[in-house]
Image: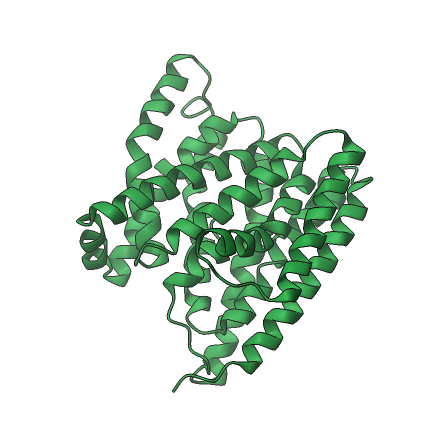
Length: 314
């Protein structure tokens, strides 16, 4: 799942959108992106649950790269693509980010296939707060008092869940930390969302192809063994790339704060799928979720107040 923290630094946001029509289309595209991540992606992997998580992972890259290449062709972004791949530091950073997003994707796929979507949604709820904490630790970004308070409340929710469950909520933590680190690294690379993803998928393409061949030799694949599942695997490329394309369009038209608040649509949709479609028992997670919801509210209010106090561009 590639979302706000990884991409916002790539966009040149307008403090005041040029027209109401542009703002309205930005809202539609933003809602579309986050609801796609929350609903379509979750339903897709749930539908494909008879396929091994590793094969689903390989095809997310193998089928996703051609879709990204098509978008780069339409947008005439290959100039930036070749400019970035000639920079050793940028390629090294994108190699690290590619490995992080690969781990993030595999963990999310595992959570959906094994009916643990509520844990995944918890991870994506706390992700923005983890990103804020990492920004303070690694980039020296000064946190406002309310931000520290929000992070502390979220941490108390995770600790409570660990105590009552008797084990670390590893799915939530892996998703939150891997995606926050991914965003931290991507902030160091000057490349658009599409170009960055294209380079990451190019780096991963041959390792994933080798893994797919290895799985096929062991008889552990559905590709070409089931027409329905084969088409499903190929469709995985669109499942991965379409919301990114929608998000990149929305992020150019809306305020940073607006896009940041929208990101909670995805884990909320995931949680609804977990409860009402998959039938997961949330149980004691409600208290942890309530604490995290409080933390998110404090963080969001503080972000809105801060954005209003900043002078407008131009």
